[in-house]
Length: 248
Image (tube, rainbow, N blue to C red; front, side, top):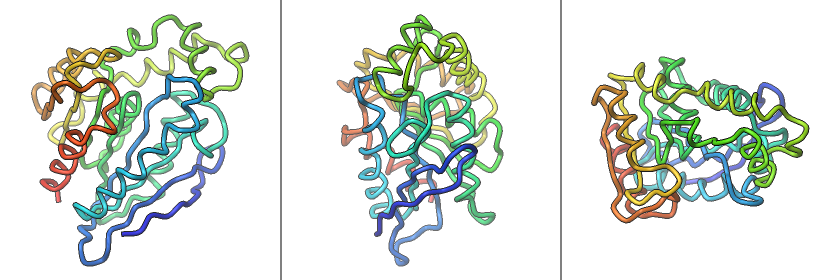
């Protein structure tokens, strides 16, 4: 297994990606693109995608999938600032850069990254399946007041100055991801929703809302005792690896 850094051409600027590639002996020829969420903690924009390459390495070494982790605009070393429309375009560019006509990629996303993946799959039939983790179904509730949301984004470092952007437009573009509308279009492609039972940021009921919107055509995995930050939870990792292994 190898892990490499690369820059790909994005719609407005280069996008930093990490790529975990399995050994030739274990490779399945499958591809998954993993999207980070929108960091809400102070300075989180620098760190949002840094924990995911370790997950990508596990995927490559244990189930033989190639795993790609992009840093979307305003995150990691990728320049620019956050907007849901910009992130949508960034993810589309990453999909186009790595897709192979012989292999349809799957997507996985944490938090808002899950809503982003659902939106991408709704508009791109090349996507084979989607896993979302701790993803809000009600984005209006998740964003809250527009001015406070913009300030939170500034605190996280994904936008430079909240006063220089339209907070209403920032939120409107997030709402346009429309996870409940997007997920209805994805079956019969594979879907899994993973959520912490004790998530205080996105209540677990929202995971059930996503399942209902998919008319039951989605696997639901509730991680007992887990909160919102699922990435470090070994049960989440095992659940994702198992789902990928069944799709190989």
